[in-house]
Length: 235
Image (cartoon, rainbow, N blue to C red; front, side, top):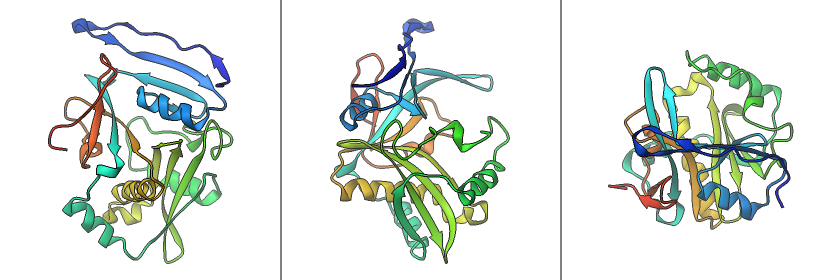
């Protein structure tokens, strides 16, 4: 049973005949099977706050949002993704229960120096006070090079699915494509643990800087109107 702090707030009519989705609720504990169902309905979360939305403003532009997921058993590496893995053969990647320490907070500060707009203030903006188990199981992928932490990604784990939450990396190692690398290792974890889906976030229907999320094979997108997932063309 989900322990909710507030009820979901429903949708409103959107322009162009579309129904605008803009829902939110809070839950302190969500069972693994329910996390699978929420992700499949387009929900994501920051800490105990769950949300889903079908439209957003980016600067002066209005964008329609589409949730994405990867069919894990059907995923195949591209040539460029194989190069990323080869480039990082000298690093160590391990998954542990998510928690924060001074090293991670310091990396987050350096990571955020890359941005000029919508710069988050703290990792606490994305996670609960107990990130490893509230509202669900969350793992941290720690990537080290010669004993130095160079990247961390966070991934929620449900029953038959997982969800990428957030990733940061040391700007000194930007040439290693660590954002792609950590995603590929999350997919590897999902394959090894017989998970069916990896939900890797929202993207826009029109071209935008979120298009990198579409650069994987076996990607499906969610249709807000029908509630169905469809394989993206060419994927």
